[in-house]
Each structure stands twice: as structure tokens, then as C-alpha cells.
Length: 198
Image 1 (tube, rainbow, N blue to C red):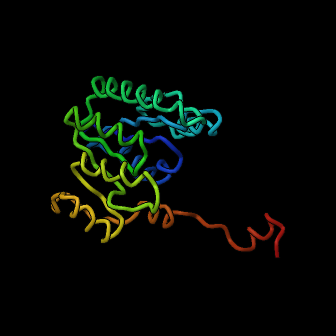
Image 2: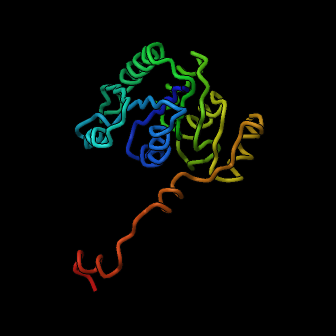
Image 3: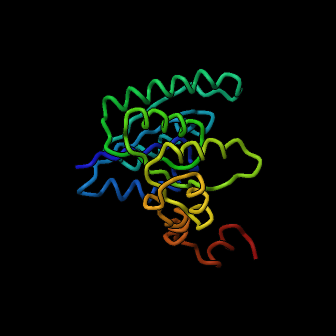
């Protein structure tokens, strides 16, 4: 059985990863190792970890770090995250890891995984966020990764420009499309009645 580590650090990335996590959880060939960190575990951000308990995932690892709203103090938090995540890799021994997006803690996880020779599947590479430092993080994660799952042909081309092997880049679309397809929408009349709108 292949051990698949999936990292989630915020509600935004979990929303995109949720369907994939659920499929890994029920697979007979894969064993999920869900690593929950970042704002999921912080009260002032809503303590989203309570939702994971409701989902009843079989193998959740919490990595609590002292993130401060005062960004000046976060370098200490990132060093703690890197240390804890590296120790987790020694204990859990994943066969592959799935990372999504462009956050700094995702980059730190990528550095640790790469150092431990754990293959990385990166979702969301090749994208651009205009004027954001996230671009450097995202492209760095791409360079650390072995497999690339992209949302658009332009992102596919950008990863090729970064020097990655085209055999390892897969144009699969955005995970949010699957979320929209599975969304159960309320009827117009029900919404109007609930919100007291005409």
C-alpha cells in the first residue's frame, strides 16, 4: 500500500483538495496521511480543525505552529514548522506527497520532502498572481516537485519554460471545477424565501 501524504494549511487549499483527500481515504491501494497545520489550528482564524474531526479521516497529523498576526514574528513559526515537518517525515515515511499552491509553509514542506527524497506531486503550478511574492514560492515548489498537475495550457507551457520534463506535466484542469460540478444548488424559490427577497 502506498502512503500518500497530503498537506493542508488553510481553508482555501483544503477546499480544493477535499475531493482528492476523500478519494485517497477510501482507496484500497492508497493510505492517507493527512497533515494539518497553519491557520487550521488557530482559534483567531476559526479553528477549522474541528471540521476534520467531523470528517473522521483515519490518519490526521497535527502540526501546530505559533503563527502571529504580527508578521514580524512568523520567521520563528516557519523554522518550527520545518523542524516538526521533517521529524514527521522520519516517522511517517510517505511514498509520495501532494502539495497545492504557493504558500510559504508549502514551500518549506517541499524543501523537507525534496531533502528526504520523497516524490512531490504539485497541484497549481505555473500560475501567476500579479504583484505577489507567492509567485516565487509557487515556482520554487514547482522546481522541487516531480509531478505537476496544472489547470490551464498556459500554466503547462510555463512549467515547460521552467525546465520540467513534459512527461511529468499533466493538464487536468482546476480542482474547483469538480467542486462546482458536485455542488447541490438550492432552488430559486427556496433562496428567496430564506433571504426574504423577491
